[in-house]
Length: 81
Image (cartoon, rainbow, N blue to C red; front, side, top):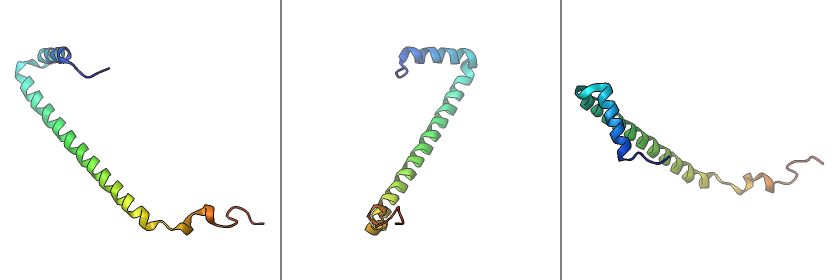
């Protein structure tokens, strides 16, 4: 399962030409191009938002870290003898 090659693209184009006709094909191509551009823009925005939030979390983590909060260092943390 690799990428689509030239022969596959030709077959897809011929089938689309038969199904939609020569008059509708340019309009469909334009709509498909706009849809792909919009999808790419949205995915880039999502990626940048995710990376920005991840940076914010990483910046906050060292500030909130207190060595006393580590439960393994507290005496008698699990038993009451």
